[in-house]
Image (cartoon, rainbow, N blue to C red):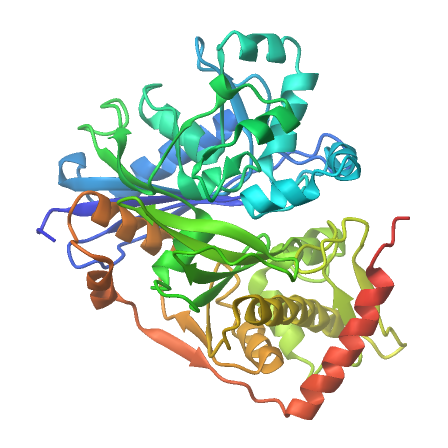
Length: 498
C-alpha cells in the first residue's frame, strides 16, 4: 500500500455507527462512534428512521477523517458494513423513504410467516435460500410495507419504489442517488435470493408477492460499486466493498478457510463458520448463508444467531436497573464466584438458533433468598455462553469439523469475564483481537482488495492485529453439570406463549 492510500471503513450497526481510517500498513487509526436510536411504535415492532441512519453515517464518516487529520484526496477507497435484514423502501423520484426502516429485530410479520409455513413453503424456501421462514429476514417486512403503506404497492408496480437493506440505502445516499445495488452477502439474507443460482428467485418473489422492479442489482462484495459525491468528501471516493456486518467480522478475523469460526457479541450474538465454496445444508437448525464473493468466487458459511445476545446489558441497565455501565455489569458479576445456581435463558425476543422458538420468553430459574443482583448479572453472561455452546455443537455436526478454537469480537467482547466464562463453558480456546474492531478491519481489507491495494487474501494476514487467548479453567464435570441444569431452564422457557 502506498503512503497516502488510506481506507475509510464504516459500520452501521443496530445501536451505533462506527467509522475508522486504516493507514498504508493496515493499522487502524482513531475510531469514531455515534449512537443510533431504535423506535418501538408497538409491542414487538422495532424501527429505525432511515434519515437518521443516513445523517449519522455521513456525520461519522466526516468526523472520522477530521479527527484523524485525513483529507479526501488521501483516501484510496471506502467500504461499508451494515446491520443485515433491516428493510428500507424509498421513492425513486423524490429519494424519500415511504416508511421507517423495519429492523431485523421486528416481529410484526410473525402471523404472515406462520401462514406461509402452514401452506408448505418452508422446504422450498430453505432449499433455495439456506434460511427459514421467519420475521427476522427481509422479505416479510418488505411485503408488509407494500401491503400496509398507502399506495406503496401501486407505486412499486409502476417502478417508482426502490427496496434495499441498509447497505443499499447508504450506497444510494452516499452516491447522490446514482447507485441502487447490494452485495451478495446482504442479498442472501432477504429470503428472496437463490444462493445456489446466485440470482433473485422468481418463485420466491411470487410467494412473497414482491415486484422484481423494486430490487437492487446484486454484485460481488468486492469491486467498484460507484463513487461518493463531492458534497460528502472533497473528491469522489470509490466505494469498493460492501458486506453484512457479521460477514465482515468473519473476514476481519482472517477466517478465510473452511472450519474457521467467529462469534460477535453485539445486540445479538452471532456465530459464523466458513464452509468454503460449497454450501453446507444444515440439519441442525442453523442457517446456510453467503459469506462473501470476490471476483465471482462465492464463499459460504453456516450461521447461528442468538437474538438476545449481549444486548441484554441494556435490559440489565434500563429494564431492571442493576447496573449503569458495561464496566459496572462486569464488576457486579465478578463480585461473586458463581451464579449461585441461577440460570438465565436469553429469550426476551424468542430463541434463535438452534431452537427457533418464537414463543419462548426469557427466564430466570433457580432463585433463592440468597440470590443477589450480582448472581443475576453473572447468570446473564453465562446464559449467552450456554446458548452459544449449543450453536457450536450444531455447527460441528453439520460441517463434520471439530472446532479447535473460536474468534470473538463485538462491543462486549472486551468484557474479560464474559470471554473467560465463554471459554470455560465451550471448553475450547477463545481468541480476541487485542485492539480494534474486526468488522471495520474486515470491510477495510475488502475495500483494499477491491481497489487493488492488495493482490490476494493471503497478503491480508501480514497485517493481523495481536491476539489475546483465553483458555478454559473449569473442570469438565462442572461444565457438564452446568449444561444439564441449563437444559432444564431452557425447557421451562420454551413455547411459553401458547
